[in-house]
Length: 75
Image (cartoon, rainbow, N blue to C red; front, top):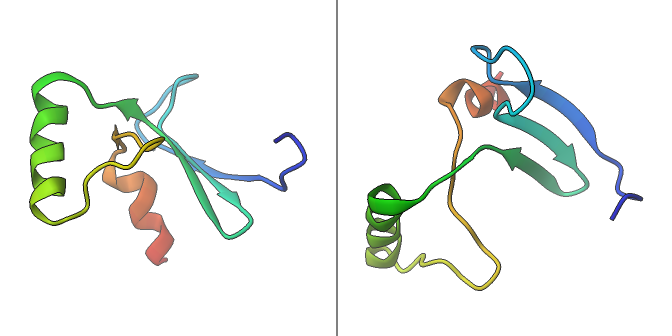
């Protein structure tokens, strides 16, 4: 896994240190670092996902990332 060619792109503009929501480019896609979604928030996200036939597959998880981390991809 350490042989991947990864490039750190940016982090949350409101972050001050470690534990930042961040975006990392990888061959064929991106890794998104963010806050794990749990509890009622996760239940709500899963309900929307399930209703749109996009439920979580094995090995998938739900994370939250501030919009400013991903919106920069448009630029």
